Image 1 (cartoon, rainbow, N blue to C red):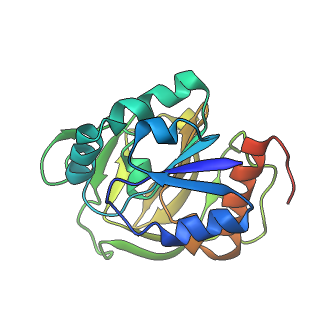
Image 2 (cartoon, rainbow, N blue to C red):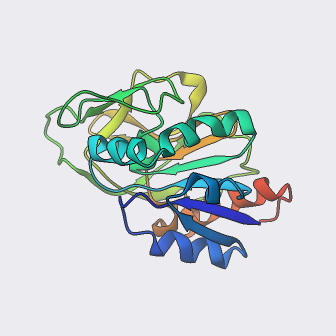
Image 3 (spheres, rainbow, N blue to C red):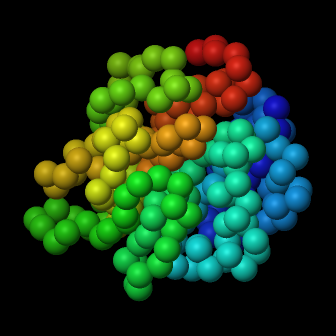
Length: 209
């Protein structure tokens, strides 16, 4: 199976590439939409600022490509900033429109007694299971590092949240063939790797734990 990783200069891709290869995926890493179009699934990674990311996606013609994936019936996974880019807009630095694939807005954590960024291990609480997840492990802890979160979301598009500072932080989100993870599954221990493996297995149409 071929997974295309969108390389737009926003993040270290090595760890996710290695995780996919361990799952017997052929990985294409490119910033060329025509090259990526040959993949069976697309992964949008991301570390850094929302405005910079959207600017690079627009400049490379990748924003339109990503928006076209649901129509093409190509599964899409966004990780960390990649997930946040799926939403309507962000106020990071300045107001910027996002990809608009999911309902909601990216906002900074409100000031409180908790530390920002949200950094550390938190348990995911699933209110519903995404289509690609066959079952849950006993331990659902994953590792978060972020200062912004999705707000005013559609409940139907939020599969799991993590509690931080009294807030319910969307951790696993999606709609249709679109999936987002606020954490880095490839860096989140056994459960993170399990989630990535389950997503890949569903794309293959072959569930194996």
